[in-house]
Amino acid sequence: MKVSENYYDEIFDFEGQWGQSSACGLRILEKEGKQIVIVTELYQDNPGTSVTAAGCNLLKQICEKKKLQLANIIYLECNPDTNSKLSFYDEKYFQVIFIEENGKLVYPQYRQLSEKEIKELF
Image 1 (cartoon, rainbow, N blue to C red):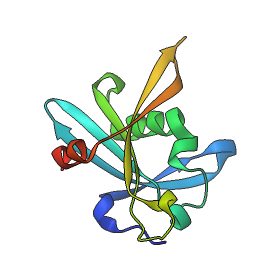
Image 2 (image 1 turned 180 degrees about the vertical axis):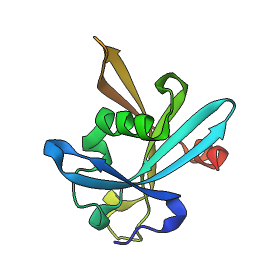
Image 3 (image 1 turned 90 degrees about the vertical axis):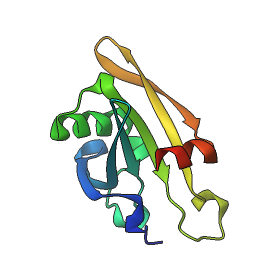
Image 4 (image 1 turned 45 degrees about the vertical axis):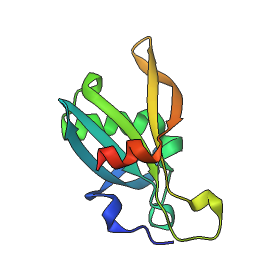
């Protein structure tokens, strides 16, 4: 299940759970004064933590390395199409909103984007 490079602009290496070396696809778009950060699961090409399990830790690392302001970000997770017969591997995009509590991002809330919303992004 190789993920097409059409889904991302770069491979982003990050520290996953328990210090695991991990990787995801990363694309950052500008739209209406916001940065849309899209992290893409790489499946077999990710040696460590998935983008969903990394959650707020991944977002923080992206903000630090790319010098982005958290308040100015729309954060999306992409499960790319891998041409598998299993519906688990169908293409899906989710907007993830993290609630901030005591200075930490917690309680991720996921909303799957519609096909129309996805087309508007690209």
